[in-house]
Length: 170
Ligand code: ZN
Image 1 (cartoon, rainbow, N blue to C red):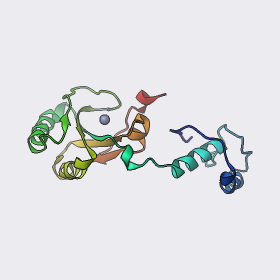
Image 2: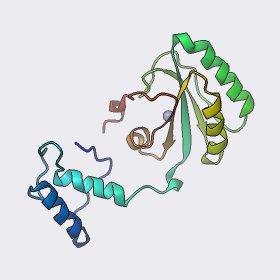
Image 3: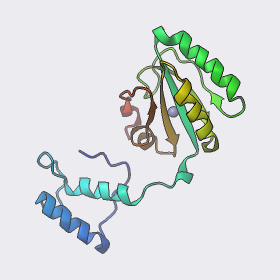
Image 4: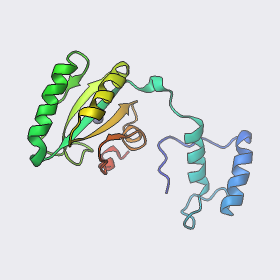
């Protein structure tokens, strides 16, 4: 099931070619909103994909970026050492968050957060790719849509993890 992050709009005449192809693909009535057989899209799902495809947010929607450095008890000292390196190197270019020795929010591991302007993205992220060591880093933009930012726009350095996206249930 596709999870639509934006509000569905009524179909218009310009959607007809797409809706016709969708009808052929699913062989279901276009008003169907229930789950269809595996591998087939429902009308609502197809329209949702279509709208997503048609209206990607402009990058100016990105207010800032977060980089969340993940760690556990075993890697606590390495996480702290990296934090000190980051603070020394990028002083004035980012805001350093608290050192959480427990999972917080959607993050499945212990973590701390770096927040920075889009103009510093290249410098900071490039450095992180070469200096994160054994730690994994989760990056996401902040556009005002928390679910989309964490689910669809996720960037990982190192390994990826399953986030607790249910915190964004609306
Ligand atoms: Zn964040």
